[in-house]
Image 1 (spheres, rainbow, N blue to C red):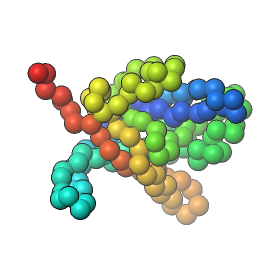
Image 2 (tube, rainbow, N blue to C red):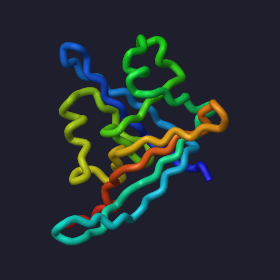
Image 3 (spheres, rainbow, N blue to C red):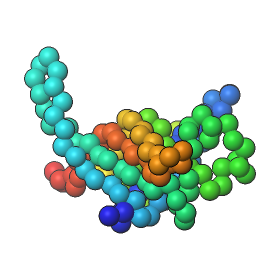
Image 4 (spheres, helix red, strand yellow):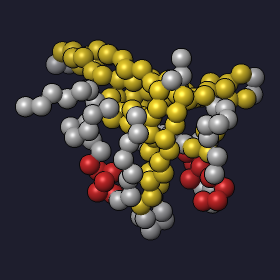
Length: 146
């Protein structure tokens, strides 16, 4: 079931506004597209969503809460990852992001297979994390040329 590859991105801002983007290419995860119906006062429309399931086991890095991850020293982050609401996911191998401008360019209108994390669901067996589920919005793919 876990046969897809994704690239996940988590952005950190330093005390003085410094930009850093952590990037992990994860193999053997589950990524599924969903169609959702959004309803508001003006009517309803279909939106594209996603479900990403990342097993919390080796050889994958282990999940850590965003606040705990962000306060770790860089050398302590080895073997860990975090993904929080607002972070981004690309199906397959995504680009390296080194600047705020590159991060800002990662939007649905410009990039296929992009997903934005809306919620994080940590699943436990006893007191041990067995996997983490991420849901959110996804860009339509493939985009048709005009």
